[in-house]
Amino acid sequence: MASAADRRPFWALVAVTVVLDRLTKVWAESALAGGVIVPVIGDTARFRLLYNPGAAFSLHLGPYSRWIFFAIAIIALVVLYRMAQESAASDRLRQLAVGFVAGGALGNAIDRIVSPPGVIDFIDVGVSATLRWPTFNVADIAISCGAVALALSLWREDTARAADRTA
Image 1 (cartoon, one colour):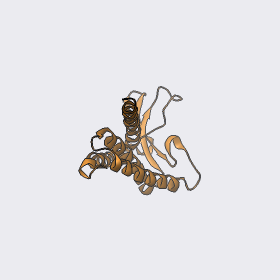
Image 2 (cartoon, helix red, strand yellow):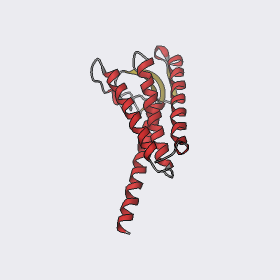
Image 3 (cartoon, helix red, strand yellow):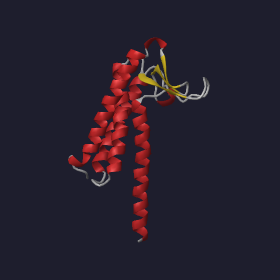
Image 4 (cartoon, helix red, strand yellow):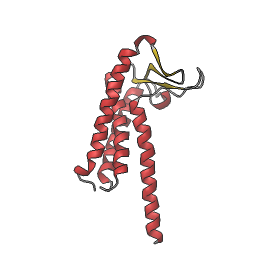
C-alpha cells in the first residue's frame, strides 16, 4: 500500500486539474457568453460555450440526471482514491493516471453543483458543421488522458504478472 508521500502525485494532479478546469470554465462563461465563438485553428478548433446537463456525449437520464451523475462521480472518486492508495509506491504512472481521472471527475462534479444549466463545455473540434466531436472541457481531457494512462498501467501490471508466472 502506498504511503501518503507516495500519493503526492495523485493529490497534486487532482488539485492542478480542478484549478485549471475551474479557471478555464470561469473564463469560458465570461468570454463566450451570448453565443460568441472564438476560432483557435480556423473552424477546426474553436471555443464555444455549451452547457451539458447530462454526462459524456450528452447522455441524459431524465430530470434527475444532474444528481445521478454527481453521485456516480463521488463513487468514482472514492474508487480512484482507493486505487491510488493500493497501488505500488513505484507505480507513478498509476498515481498520475488516477490523479487525472479523479481531478477531471471532481471538476465536472463541481459544475453539477455550481452551474445550474449543466457542466460547462467550451472546446469544440471538427471539420464541418456536421462532423464535430461533442464539445468538451479541461476535466474531460484529464479524464480521457488519465483513462488511457490507467489502461497502460494495468496492461503493464498484467504483462509483468504473466512474465513472473512463466519465469
